[in-house]
Length: 175
Image 1 (cartoon, rainbow, N blue to C red):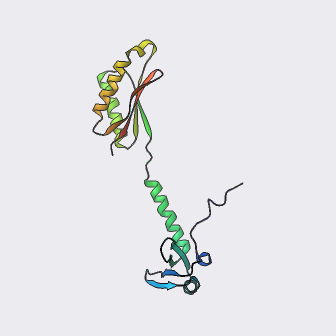
Image 2 (image 1 turned 120 degrees about the horizontal axis):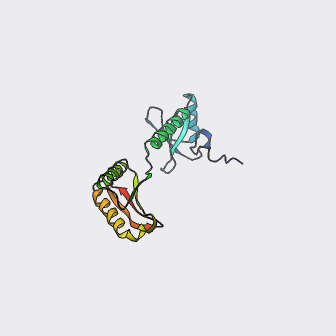
């Protein structure tokens, strides 16, 4: 069964407005004063427009005479723009071994910096093979070094910790 309530608009218009008195604003933005909904609806119908409830929290409630279809389109357009500008922070991973060479380490730090500047979180992972897990102290030192190298653009959100055959640390971008 399709839920019809999700598609239904909650803005009250025309005959749906049931308050004893409402403050009415005309299409140009001028106040027409306190009127009954019936009087306001008559004025709106004369201008071939709709009576739309803007704020029911105000005392008395505020309504405006406008083209409801155009108003609804503008609201949807604003919502689309807001969604477009919204950035969700992804978690990007930078993997390395504890025996990493200096140049490779710098490449990983630069990758992490780029991710943090883009607003994403960075999961720095040091992988172990076989008995290398005995050297987890070296991996922890490496991750702490990385945290200090990235402290201009990011802050440690989760300190280095072991997870199975890996040691990981989470770095979030600075505000």
